[in-house]
Length: 448
Ligand code: GLN
Image (cartoon, rainbow, N blue to C red):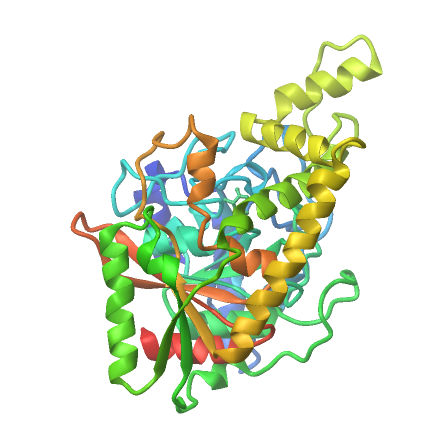
């Protein structure tokens, strides 16, 4: 705990944490020391965990990096966080992110951007940027982030750490401030695969508070790391090598993995995924629609920020929301309201739902024919601060390779894979079929 607190203080200019629970963490560490001495400590005794500012922790502030939640205090604890506490993990603080997890750079925060520890002029990725930087700079051992379209994997790649998103529904969403409920997944960031596996094993599984959490049995993920590996069939997305947006160094990193796998006797097949160009539009239509519904609850009446100078109820709603939400969140509420509106519902929302089904089926089929899909996590390494802030479409392109697993609801992991010429981390992504987290972790262990 002391080491983590020192690292947090030494790197405070990176903006990774919004709040640090120093005294609380110290007290808890002493309690856990005693449990260790008496042989009663849990599986995560002494593991220092940071949580993204979208996960509820009872009697602690939660803001989703937004002004609209000014002053809000959680009245309950997210299931995933509670399960960590039950196994004696130590929660060190809440981490900065894009407002309501909307973004790919952690620049959309009401508290200012997060900076990448590898190069302070670069973004750490987003939306779980604070969570990734906290692991990168050893401010905690593990972070819990959330991944709706890549928000754990992409910052993992930009910061040179592991970022895993399990199958949709594998981890309860109870206590997670919703962005797009049919996509939102809690994800895990760490430098060590066995920590990822242990934490997943602890937090996954059914939950009486979330009816969408899967009943599928939780497997002993840690044991998978010890399994000897059989020869595997790996599909490589052709666009990962050939798409014009992919930086040469990332292409090269992918080729090296292919050579390694072929030399080691695995079968590698370059595959086409003809629906690729439809994945981003489908994702942004459906997530903005869900966001516009989820964010309707922030009306200035029930929680957080309320505009002080309104004469009527309608003015109170309008002013509180206009002043409380940042620009990107407002853009998405407008877009989502538009695609759900009576005249456009069928043209956009219904059609996107149907395309989602096609993408899901084609991806699952591909992962029935192959054990894993290998692709870049991101087209480029970490971009510069402000580079994409005026161009939302360029920003959305950063998600080109991460949204497929999200649209299909499948598990995926980003693994650090060296650096480019400027010393910026490169990430390689593996995707597997539904509930194949164990196999995914075992294969990741092999590649790392
Ligand atoms: N960058 C994507 C978005 O803005 C993903 C965000 C996320 O996964 N939370 O929607």
